Image (spheres, helix red, strand yellow):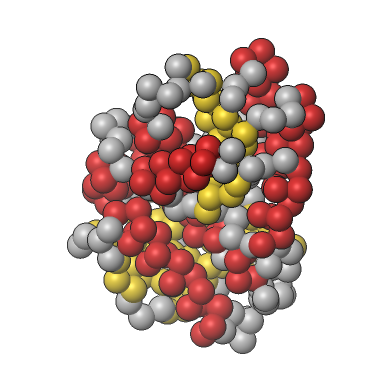
Length: 158
Length: 120
């Protein structure tokens, strides 16, 4: 599986993640060294997840802390910093990044409606055993963008 | 003018409502999925619709098709994160006037709306 998601594909997701924060907030995010994770995944306060289909089989999720989401909501001019809006935003960011990726991988990569989770629910999700983790930091708040493909799934290709 | 905002994200609907506050829009309604969008559209008959694509119940492309048939001349601005050319072309073929790629800001939305009406 490590051969299935190469440097070029990872760079697409990194660039799209950084582009999201730069466009929406005007403040750049930083990407840190990607890693492959085999252990039990760790989740932050909120996680937005989309499933991938078509030319890939798995999911993409973004796990972020409440403070990042509240900061981002304020930047969007949203006064309501509720849990419901944090969940919504977690799903919306994930959906945006994954859906933007179709610009590179083509329309045969299908993206589901996003599903948002708080930490306890995210920890119960059955996930593929191997994940590519792209650590990000925006405004000193950490987040992880994770791409998890099923072991025998093809990698998305343009 | 009457505006209908369609997006399954409450954050995006509220962002669009704030971004599109203008004396030009006498009334603004919203819908959070495609099925609700069609119900509201049939009764409300807006002049401008902003339409997400990936939504539960009924996707935005199908809504664009149906709205264009029900009310030829309605202006539909698709606002979606789907970054492939095929989707943008399909949206326009079905009747959308224009396509704006997410992520969006108030400025980008405002510019897209101004461009939409300057085309007339």
